[in-house]
Length: 399
Image: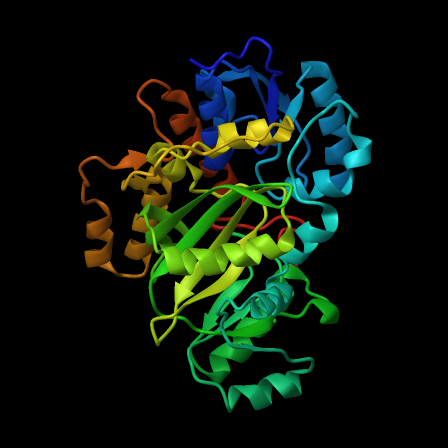
């Protein structure tokens, strides 16, 4: 039994997301008061039995500094002693740490490190220095350069922005004409200036995996591997909806070597995809909690609790052995089902309905059912406001 009487309460942000729910549920089960913050009044974590309070915050992608000011007030009012930012607000908290109460404790990378990690183009340079395989990239500065490259490239090719999440700002082009069209679509959709133009990346057709890790002042605390079996879009593209535990010591060590070089403090997640020759290549780092955190928790690696201890300045140890399990995001699979039907892929759509015995879930617990239903309401509202877009972007989300 973990003693929590003397442990400070915790404020968890981005409460509408299942990663935040995994954090809130883990810490709530240990008896900690968990305060939730989010821009949506329907945020799923708000309705968890583990939620002690809820604070409505601005959308940090739209008003970042207003978000920090509101967050500072919320932390004071709730009396929380630990702040765990569960999305890209981790970067804001790193950047504006001096505008938060001095007493609040957290574990996020420093601002310079955060910027380096989230920039997909800069990551390619870091991976190269660390000896971690990375895909071939192509940089262009004019449309003439792009046209010239399109005559030399092997298609399909990936076009991606330097910063984005959940496959926002990423497009796969099948031929030169398609590449030109998708380039202009990205520019117009995200209002990209010339200094933030996307770059081209080799298309990787193989298995997709992730490596998750927690660091304490540059030292590894815990790590875990996952394989993506299905995503919201076909071809393991976009956010994963079904995944399983995965372990490949050699690949994981190379990937963790990149994180080691960054001297991180806090959580990070890497995505890797297998190339045509069977080599796993790193494609991006998210220096923050990841959407599929529930898989690691269910497998026995309690990242939220270890993260909380790290924020308190303790030196946690991960003594558990990860179990081999499957974990599914039910709402995500519903979206994947609808997407397959829309594309006329009936066989794939029916395959999503297949039941897998013993599979755990990101977003549903029998003992805590309300978050699951409010997650649907929240997504439905956002879907309607986005004009039917299943993966909308807001503010500075893609840049």
